Length: 203
Image (cartoon, rainbow, N blue to C red; front, top):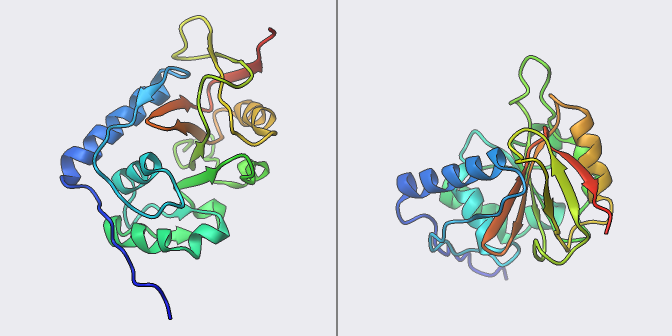
């Protein structure tokens, strides 16, 4: 017997909630490496993903923005929860994804270049990839340079896949094509647009 669907809680005020999340995402992507608070909007849902990531998804996704999730998540109550609260479909095809979630250190980040990368004429037609991580302060330091970065900024994310840095560097090399990345740790997120160059910072 299947367990009953538990709808949890979506946005209490969809318009204002979505606007606050959109502004926070824009701030994170326009100021790479600077942590931005994910607004607490009281969203509750399946524990397959942190509530902050659920808040992002339910705020920015709709019926026109397919979400790529790992197979186990697509088969979990999470897919139905997204459909219930924001009508967002999930997809197994990374090229069709407007947004994607790579959760934890075992996430298949090697597929980063399989998502929609946009093209020279329409670089915005690409996937925004959300990585969950443990925190932004205890990992190996990564130096960021590029547009929106004041001289040089360092981040220290932990709990990412081991190949994350190499793949993010390869993503930058494709600019203006490529994906934009959000790192989410607890209530904070950091934006890494494709225009940002990442290097392992020497101790």
